Length: 339
Image (cartoon, rainbow, N blue to C red; front, side, top):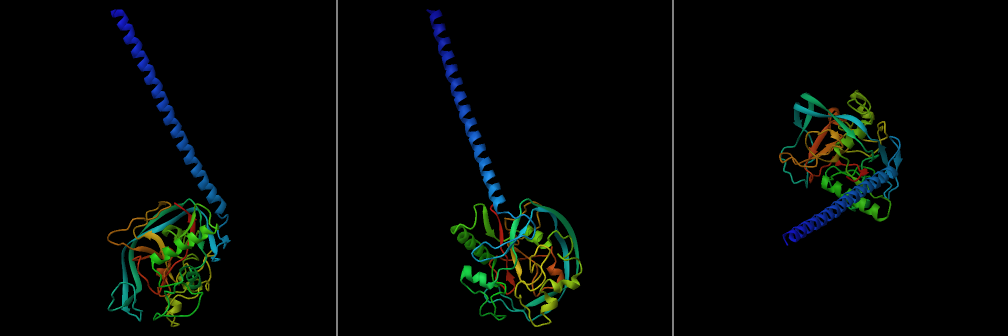
């Protein structure tokens, strides 16, 4: 009887072990299969992303396309490695009163407007290496009034103290929020009619994208070299606007382009970028996506028609609150892959 019970216990234990082993095998097999399927899904997604990029990517720097409803002209900016700058220290300025327009709807109160005239600077420059692993398209020109009206159906520049007529002037008095909404609507419309492939979108350029495009592989102060005495050939800035009594952005594309065929990257309108203000992070595809509580502002680039030459350098950065609108605030559109 005891022997029979021992046999029964051994048989039951063996059966239970076998069932447990089978269950473990099935569970492991199911987990392996799920992992395998997940890996295949990720690989397929990655492949789809690469195919979408490849189909819409350009081949050579400066290549153009305008296959969108607005006929916006875009220039191909290839991937690459370049150097940006963090600048630390104190700039010295001679400040004098200037006849500057007081903002009317900027949510700011300024009693005594002045403009800073650049004299000298005592600063430390920290080089920052940046690698953009994917190319992108950038607007050949700043977005014009005509293009803005076609998408937004408004005229933020109308009835202003500084007012000029013409559809080829940059769309100004545009906040970061406004410019971002323009890009969102353009993306939605182009996807709706099937002109924009999956994986691509219209946005503001990142800080790094903007500077790479401005430099166009140059390593000098300006895209054309270090001689600021010829800046007037490439830009509308204080040196050729104040003396003519024209302290405002001018019609796009009137000056020489940079090496990749982009116009007005120096001067004219001060251009919004996607990033929040902060030190340049460097690295691969850098973008500052979190606001600094002390400085919750968005990056602006290129200087403008009222700035001195140093403020129009390729590396010069500015910032403003994302809701602010001013006479020199404009933008250009990037066409890049969705992150």
